[in-house]
Length: 172
Image 1 (spheres, one colour):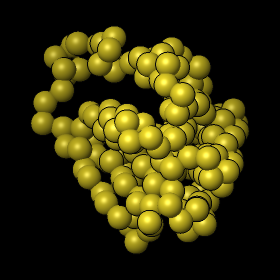
Image 2 (cartoon, rainbow, N blue to C red):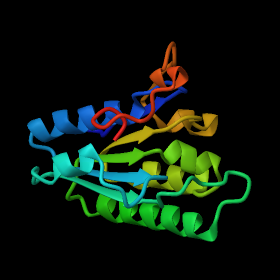
Image 3 (cartoon, rainbow, N blue to C red):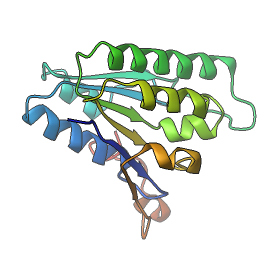
């Protein structure tokens, strides 16, 4: 069976949450899941803690805790993103996993941390049965022909706009 490429993009909240839910569903069906979180790093989050108890769901972070300066990314941000993509490719080609989640990869491409051509190469050369999920704002239009589904998450109302900060269990 051909693996699907699914994209969650848009300015609304819930793209990573959707990918995690899909990963949990895959685990329930006996699939092995590998998730790379680009642009996120070295922080304890609910999802990292939760998957520690699952044998077939692995999450690795490929970023720093600092925000990336889009106009002038730090060389450390470039290195972290490239290391994350290298790791994603290793796990994809290992054929040990049936679902690969590339969390915030769209943002990493938009910030110039990862070349779109490298992502196209991964999508075209992945094992036939590997499903791939890509998340993040600003999905590059150039990739549209390489994916099977694009869902746009649209913000209608967000609690941040009311002064409510990141909430444990909701944002992290």
